[in-house]
Image (cartoon, rainbow, N blue to C red; front, side, top):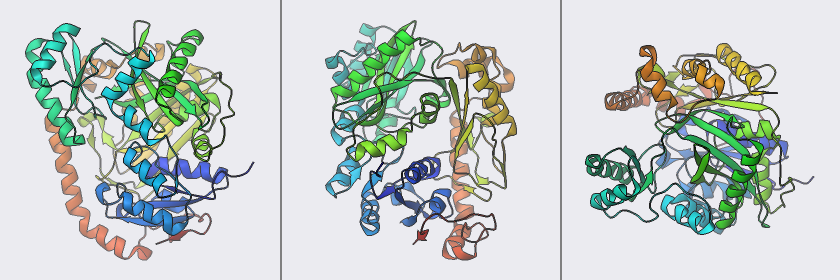
Length: 509
């Protein structure tokens, strides 16, 4: 089979960059990595055929520099650009700039991204397509008074949500009328600060819902299929911690119905590439929540259960190839994913910064670790706290769960705190073992157990900010010296005595 492209630039960092580079290598495609000064020694820099410096550590000066990314793509002769997830992955302006510059964008068309990236526009599009949505508004709320009127009509509790929100920002649960004004002002201001868009809308708040998402793939010739569902209800402040596939409450008939609804949602906005349609499940009913117009962090468990390389298909679809997978794929076995974050669960999930001084990566049957960790790696405050994804597969759910227990017990990351201990506890709770949990599980469990009840609050958020600022100040001089004389650094992959071998030409500038 011929390779779809000769050379691809990966516009991301960390484990997702490494993950994409591996699929490219499997396809015989040469690769270009980009990196910030903070990532000069990173694994994705080592694994690519070529690597080019973007700029200083701050994302606004490096991984969000559209002009610099396109400049590097031209200089290196790349034919396509894969954005991974985060950073520019769901930025329609970036996708449009990529295609206008003559490169293939490995993702959906900009118009689809614009509709699905706006929660209000996507709700309206889904209503028009006959897809069930959570009861609420499809137009932005003018002010707190309009929010109060709508909430009274929908019925409490309600959820105030930012149209441009994400990662838990701009969301407030309101259980009574006297909470509306303060919640509206706070959430709108939070969204305006984080996303430059303070528009708000209301959805009915579903008690004890489950967060179930459906993976879709579509080509540029009109074919769209679903690749099963994932359960993502173990989360804190709307950020996922543990995922599994398939979902324990979804049977074959329901899977077909939810899959058909996800396909209809994608077709309604002329979508192609990989994407995820998210649903809220409550009392046997399911409602469209939103669509992620990119590859998801938890895509690996779908790959394990369905035997599909989703990244490779994104690349082939971007090259114009037809999707040859069958319309009705069947799940085989079960898979879990634990996100390994550099943070301290016992101190309200504050970031844990420092150097990974020792490292033991687990292995064995049914184990996959998508990681960018290495001994000597510095965990900085500039980027997301996720270090790796721990994935286990089994012939059934219990085998996959027990393998994850083994993985978490074998894992060792010295020098920084991680979320592994929390995940280990969760996987052994009666509720998780039975598959009987919802999006409120973590908070309820921690509140019921004094040993696990240190949930994050505003004070901890301030501590996190102070820790990050102190770390930046303390390491600035050391980083400057390291970046200036990288060839002499004991952490440099180019001089490390760790049996590392470069792939391809290994050009770095």
